[in-house]
Amino acid sequence: MAKRVVLAYSGGLDTSVAVRWMIDELGVEVVALAVDVGQSSDDWDVVTERAKAAGAVEAVVVDARQEFAEDFVAPALKANALYEGRYPLVSALSRPVIVKHLVAAAREHGAGAVAHGCTGKGNDQVRFEVSARALAPDLEVIAPVRGWGMSREESILYAYRHDIPIQATKEKVYSIDDNLWGRAIECGEMEDPWAVPPQAVWLLTRPVADQPRDLVIGFDQGVPVEIDGERLGMLEVVERLNTVVGAYGWGRVDMVENRRVGIKSRETYECPASLALILAHKDLESICLERDLDREKARIEPRYAELIYDGLWFSPLKQALDAFVDSSQEFVSGEVRLHLEPGSCVVTGRRSPHSLYDYELATYDAADSFRHEDSAGFVRLWGLGIETWAQRQGSRREG
Ligand code: ARG
Image (cartoon, rainbow, N blue to C red; front, side, top):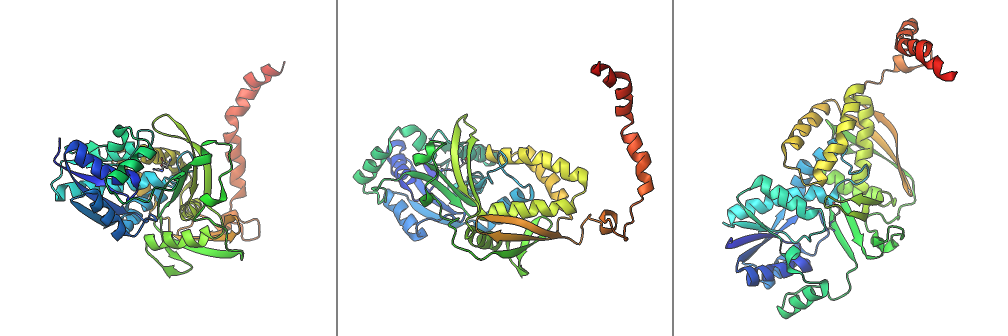
């Protein structure tokens, strides 16, 4: 058993109790590592104080927002990654970056193990552990919450007995995980898939704006770099869009999804920035990607999303798909106009210096340069096989 453990620490009840529990039950030293991926957390000073009060020998905060935006969110956007066609992989995307920092901290602090606070029913344990094994097969992975068998009430009592300063006395109904790519809200009354999510669960998508507006997003090789002509980094683009698009009450997802561990789960998400960016990016691809490339990419995208969902961010297939996706983005530069109204966000225009849209080919007016006479022979050959089938076989069915 390792002597020192680096724990992915959130500042919440479970990870705070986990600090003390691992010290007492496993006889290890605990380094608490909080990774900032843009979540709405308590003040980071409060978080580190809490970890220390729980018994951590050291409590560290890493600001990984920029890295998360550029190295994890941007590739997912280039791949239009939506799990089961709808979920932009908010939590799933953050786990590999957290693990990257866990492993780095384990090396730095001479730890032989990393730990996480996930339960045994979710996807996040899968992502933490598989990512850790991919990056550092020599490190042990400890999952205290999965094994300790304490109910929520018992955990609160445990914290109370050990003077761990948690704020969990009031009833906590929802399980929430958030970062700059969106927010996931589960549990409570929403465990009934028929129940309407209470208004109070929505935070990023409260409809406060009533004036319709346009938003022009500029892309460079598949990555957003501008909003309304203003040059911005990936992180700023996402932050800005969460505020602007979220204010129109748009970007919610309500679905029952298939977890990796075989459970169907009712999930609600609010992801104004991610859904708006995927919408715009996909639209820009419609003029920048040659047809076959566009179609093959669309076939690969669901697989790419599944790999992220299933904890396989660090895997050879994901690497190979990244190479394909990156290559596809060479000419995906240009602008997309989004129109926002309360409850809606739609594309109303797209343009690109690399556009494959050819006005003279597409137009029906005098500028038309399409060679109409070529079509007659093309269509005849296109239908030749069907014609032969109709004559020899298809006609027999009618009788
Ligand atoms: N179902 C989503 C996923 O697997 C959200 C998970 C949210 N995590 C949480 N600890 N509440 O990606």
